[in-house]
Length: 237
Image (cartoon, rainbow, N blue to C red; front, side, top):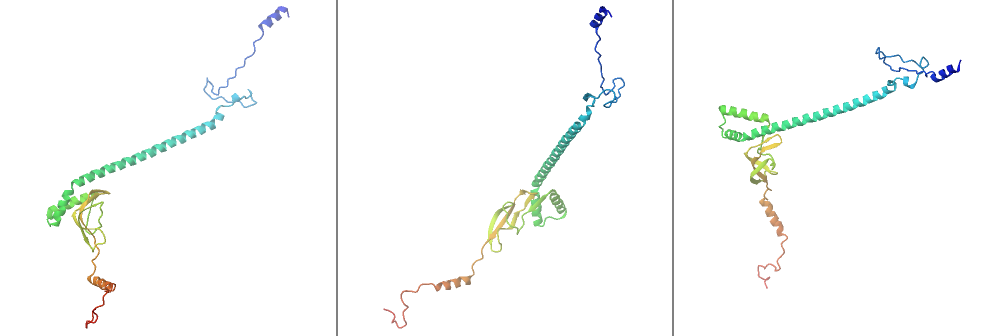
């Protein structure tokens, strides 16, 4: 080989061979999943040849489980808030309805007083009695209750005393006369009852016992300093 040939080969030199490995799992032309060669067959296995999903599957499952628990907790919290909202709405609606019924019933109390007075005087008869009974029954179904009856204990929270007497026949403050009936709607007092109250009075002392006490006290009277005079007058100085 001539020196010119050597110089030419030395100048041009062969290019180093470049090897390109396509490690994509999806074939860009066919769209199919390529088979991954096992270690020892064909191309040597490298860390890059191991599918990325092999180590990521456990982490992905844990992340999905955590998200599911968070969404479940959010759903339970929303359900509890909605249940409390429904309860509050139902309670407020019930209060409004009760107040409306109590207001209407309080407007009809004078009518009930007239019906009661007519019944006491014997004028509640015929068609008037039928209408009155229906009105009273309707108000009772709505929740209106009357109170204030003779013989019941006096309660200043629901009774308004306008008369007061005493008697040994009662053991404590007792309603002995009802001047105006009282009414309440549930736990709310719509109108207090006007009543006469009789309080307990101790029984008077028996006259015989007083005489015995006086005779017993005579034994403790001090004797007089001067002796009583004798019949012959000898005891007098």
